[in-house]
Image (cartoon, rainbow, N blue to C red; front, side):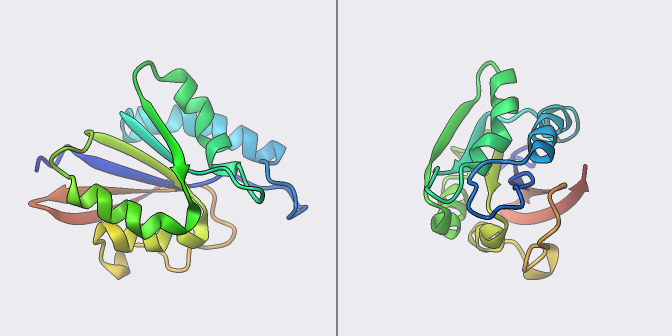
Length: 156
């Protein structure tokens, strides 16, 4: 597999103070706009974007990536995978590396991002586990050299 293939992982943007609110806060909406410009200019233009399936508890991952998705002409959006299937998504992407799009973006809930990285085969010391509760501005970029994942951290 070529080292040009990469998987970008971000946490959804800021949530409101009220836990029962499933949407982003005003600050979160601004961060979603910021990601829409930061990601393609600094990390790569996604060919496919994954966000957790909307649920009664949260639509924040989908809201976070929508400003970017709306700017992209040819990207595919997948928002049908449940939050607790993060590890399975990672495994699926690794098992299909040769078929994978050159740049994949995944926006998930922070509590399940370590599972996603485990599914990708990332080494435990290369990513935060648990993901910090107050960290909404980190992107992890997973690249593969001879099928071995390497994680690089970027801060927006």
